[in-house]
Image 1 (cartoon, rainbow, N blue to C red):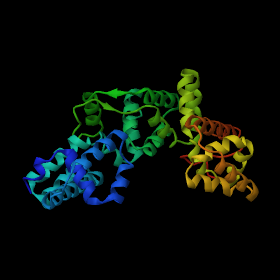
Image 2: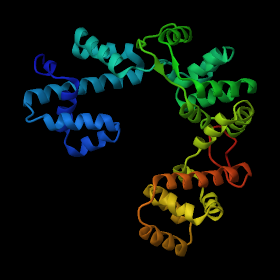
Image 3: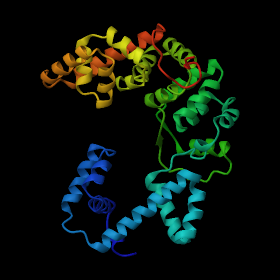
Image 4: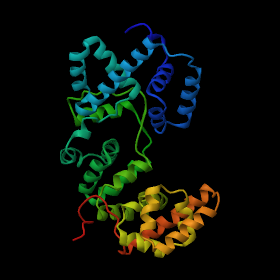
Length: 337
């Protein structure tokens, strides 16, 4: 298999792969790429005049091996993947694939911890410094991190949430040290580059996984310590498209409390799922009126749509704070009996 594919660049291989998979699959792949990546790939594809059958087979085989290796890593870690690949492909080729995955795909630190029970992680980190806790939680799955955050002492919860939100970059040395303490038998290799984690989006995902009382305690504390940060987090805790997660009664209440003009703008560019859910909770006459007005309202500015959606989300949050509606969250306090 050596020869043809080794002369190709990464972009050329990607272009050949997409051409080989056909337009439908390639279009699906494009949905997960950035605009810059799409432009570069499209340019590369346009430069490919003819795909040699040997090159196509080699690129497809290499992609299959990398995908298989990544699947093994997600199942049982790098050590597990290496053992399986060595049996299938031989020691040298297995090591080559693992090296490329850990360097190009950058296996995220604390990979082993994401497969661990949250209570086990909690036992280790609950007495650590809030910054260490924040670092570890920012790398875990949001649901895991939310469960752990809910179990921490109340005076620590808000501090940890704030540290996750303002976290920017952490040196590989510190990550390695914390990983080594958390798991002595660490098998993953930390990339020697500064790894970005944390931030507003991370803390929002984590808070979406905690119970309502924990969320309220953290946000109330943050409103005192850092009002701007608390407001930014609140804005992102529930987005307009999340309206589909509300029960029918709650959606009907939201429709009554929102301005029709805001609903029209918000629904203009909403997904079919959102439109279907909202229209289902209107009277048939109101739904028909909305559909007709949306059809004839013409193009709308994205900023106007975003502002309308933001006002609707504001109404939803006010209704929730007043106990008029319930937004389902992690934990058990949202169960209705």
